[in-house]
Length: 222
Image (cartoon, rainbow, N blue to C red; front, side):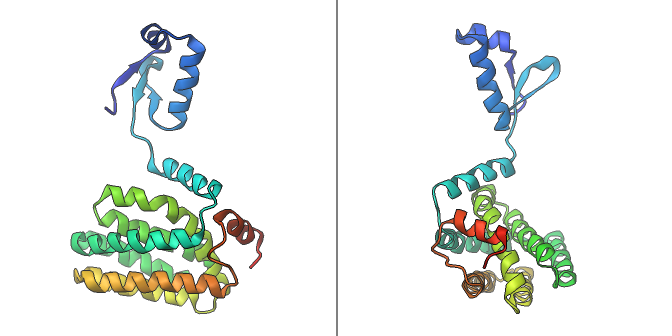
């Protein structure tokens, strides 16, 4: 359980019957994973890992396995729809205020592809938080991290990309404000289809492995 003491290295050596270097290496891996931390007196305690760190590792694994953006897109069509449907049910007044604030910032950043892409990422993260389902929130994060550079590229190279993105966000929030699950679902699907079309219009192939596409995006090709 989080907060529970694991013990000192010396205690673990005695308890597990292994040498100190083995314990030290094992604890180092657990610390790096965010599963344990050093408490008072250098004692190790169990802690909850930060999901951002885990998501980064999973994102790297996707790149190593040569997952394509087509696969990410298909997954997003399931996860993002589930998120927005739940958000339409769960959203309260404060949630709507947060979404409205995001859109206001996005409108001010309409000519800034980097800032607008950051706000797009934050918008979808907000929806996941509003859905009040930690499994969905955790499940979508690894893929979401890989979508950011493509959103920036679309905003930069597709003339209407930025305005269509903000328009879709507005319709999604309007539906959520009314707790209209059906229209929220329709608009997030349109938003995702727009993303795919913009990706292809920018001259990139969606069936390429993530790693090669990210290399093109970061080098300014495409």
